[in-house]
Length: 447
Image: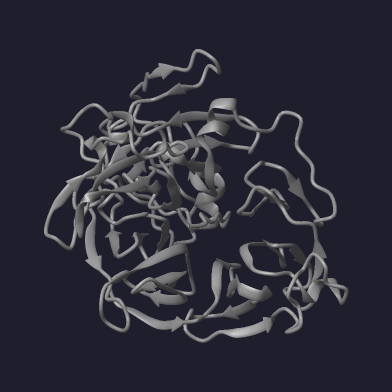
């Protein structure tokens, strides 16, 4: 699964701190201090200024909900915040993509408590009717996973056979809205009202363990609500704290799941791309919703792997160099694909931009698109023409500060040369944990 980043500045913000000091354990090697999760955050409603009037705004609110879509209020009360999320439900923030602070990891899940049988990791119903908690089964017959857990349990069809099942606790989705920052992970949904200083883990029906929702991979905000997607269910919240759950119906009947790669909002629509699996067969898809419950415009065999909203339209990339646009997520126009005779981009001798291979990431900004996969390509004229560039190691891409970044925090303006700011980057501990996603949004200035 590819975790995909975006740097769209949404009409949303996070509030200032409630004054609670968040102390945590310090990493002796790097000095990173990981604040504990679960601290209570006051989510009470404060008076919101009327953005429909031409009057100058009054004093800035001290806590959400608040709407920073009004440019005047945003200029007075808002500041840009970058949030990086990753393995172990990592959340860490920055104001400039150079200095990072407030690192948090989830200490409530089974990966952090492997010896505690009361902390479930994955309880799943198998065909034989049995329920297995993989966390506390004997893992010695299964190889370890990087930053995850590989555990053993009896094969449902043959108890004498040991199955190995691996899982992690990656945080993939970041969304800004109502003055809040929401991060979705395999082990829960985390909400911050103070720009990432403290976080609250949402109670059920939001995911509490790995098996609930499978990979909870995407999050977005729009139309006054947050939407978080898992493999086979969706979670919707109007306040960022209370969530309702709905289950997807798999097209074609039978058993299966939706594996989401990315979710974005624009023009009144949420648009998701991913892979639908039915009876072991994977099929790329794109689908859209306005409320997170009723879905429409489902297109299977769409061949999309990532999607962004550029402020006017949705732009998707996928297999065989495919690039397509849509204004509503239902009707798509293909801009270009690889030449039909392109079978190997590395040995292709034709026009380089006509043989990119499978594309898995796209970022947009200032009328430019940068797409990557087997190779990368840049368009500076809204997708009309393309120039092929070298592939990137650290995907996905995101756009910020008039630059295209990869998850190694290297950047480029034209794709020909990549730079690293001398003071940019994360500690060795954070890099070891692994960044999966970077997003940005407006939050309230600290008072």
